[in-house]
Length: 468
Image (cartoon, rainbow, N blue to C red; front, side, top):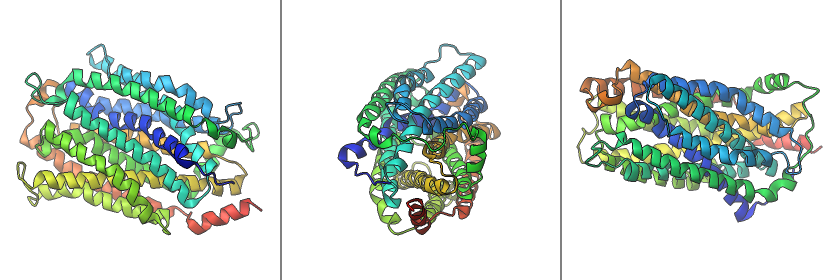
């Protein structure tokens, strides 16, 4: 394979690629549960169940779209027809997500399910082909990580900036809404603006990357007629390295998704922060994307991607759960303490930077499986393999939100109008279940990566064998 020098414009395309997916995933992860539960009154377990059902749909649609894009033949190449199709539906269904027109439990559940399935299917049509371009453009072990770093860091950056704007502008405390997170109009206004930005940035990526088409257009080695899709799926998913990334990422994204979904509960109720402080916490986390972007190349230089990712997950578990556990044992600053806010701000910056770097590394590890599978099967499966990365990002808002919803039900956390009076016992129970559960999930995710077999040397060996 020829290693393509993308230049500034090419790398800007992949940075732009992170914008629509970052807005969709962060918007759903940070605000969907609290919007439907605390503002609209839909029970937390139903919100989580709707996202879990959507995830089951994703489990079929994501690999199918990846498989389909691997075998598409058109004048626009394999990937770009999917990018063009996704632009308007991504914006429309994201807009619809925040615009329910009824208030019954059954209506809200149905509206949520339809909107989430729609926006995530459109996101699949955009993100899977976009990710699949990277291993087609370069087979360099480190360049793939750099390109994923552009994409993932930009997604988190724009998602965090928008989350800051949510608390600072749309969910700001006002005389009408002393607790700004209950302002329904704020969520609707933000959803409309985000929908426009999503569509415009997706269009910028799709049309800005058109120069890649001649390099991406490739006649597939298999059209799929000789080998049914299900058989190829079984062959690929049985690969031990592929399976290790799937299991580890599923657990890690589930933990991260639960943490993110509960973030809007933990900050005001467990830590006692107001809307302005929460906005400041998120503002500080803007630094996280820059920390990840500039720090990741240093820690990956001449190192195995697997070992780097295991280390990142272990540190992430430590940073993400230790403050809660220490508070439960009375070893952490109390609410209102002058030390609490700066400590939590620093921990938040580090935690989000670790999440960004871990997501980048898992995507880069998946790309290295492409050549290993081609050596065994004589098939190029970029889209199919990279569909896992798209699916895993949805696990965070599917399984993660479901776990968060179950946790809220277990601790008997009130919803809707009852949420204006939260007992100290409910808040304490939330902390008791939050820390240990997340720590266990992260530890399991790190352990699963022990089965990943591809390193720098084995990747180079695969490339040499493919060129013979």
